[in-house]
Image (cartoon, rainbow, N blue to C red; front, side):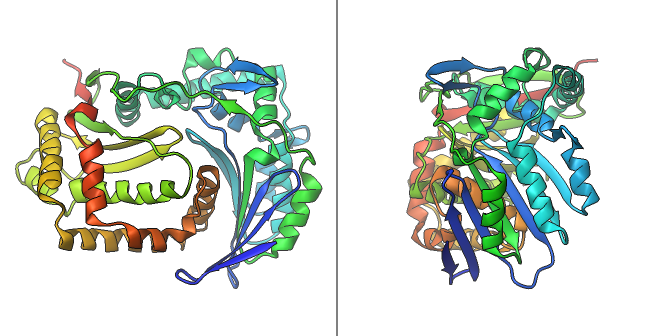
Length: 423
């Protein structure tokens, strides 16, 4: 087992790759009573088209999320209840490119870890239980479709991307999930829930070798097939410049999104993530000149905010909130990006924003969940997230200016609007 100590942040990580291909991380936290386990597969809402046993499979939108719901079913009952009896707090989530199952506990950790590894690796579905779940998830889908925040964000991605699977809702639609059967779930589990496609991260005061030994005892010995995925060929151009929907809202809402150049997995992935986040803060953050001007003019309020996101084959920066004049706000954002490109980013402001962002990363190390998810995303995307101090040192104001010049332009912009329904 390999141990790495990160002097800059005072963290120790044990790494082991099992013969079946599973990557294990144990982040040591001596003296803490809480222990956290995160078991994730590189399979999410975008993975609807893939090649299994030489045949290309097209599966319904929402199937990864559906599978997450059903994985807690076991022949003996329900894994959630079993973990709760042991004092654990379990849960799961599905994102665009991963599904994760986790728990935290202060006692019975090894028994809880055994339960987690067992139910995630051994599926149990029946036609009856799958049919019953359709009603539950269908109701969940209807609820989120009534949510303006969900609508405006999902529709922004649909305006931005022409073919990429990122434009597909993680939950799918009521119609798409109606095509999911027990056999479909078994096929997707066989394809993606294999040790070589998964990561186990444990954070806490635990014996790393005990974690490795337990995983070796519980998990399958074979690694599973290598799955080829098809996310769709995506051109540089956006799908449509503007998209609008009328809903029961008291005030108009908007999101402006910029389709950025994606980054391939590898060490550059972390660096670009830092650059994109800094560019977002410098352009749109609540201490930026643009934010102050828009706020003073009454064009935005405290709901305004932005972010930079990256996924396989996808990168985008977006911002929005409530505004009675979203078109003017969008134009001002593009105008400010051009000014920063032409005049350069103020060095003093850049250093202040960079220092705040670095501090935020350091504070994230206080969260066991944040550490576990970061280690998982790093493994799936080919970088070491705990090397962020070194990456921060290399990023300059010129890097941010170059990012803005390449990505934050009118050509790459889309506008998603939610407007009040007329009485």
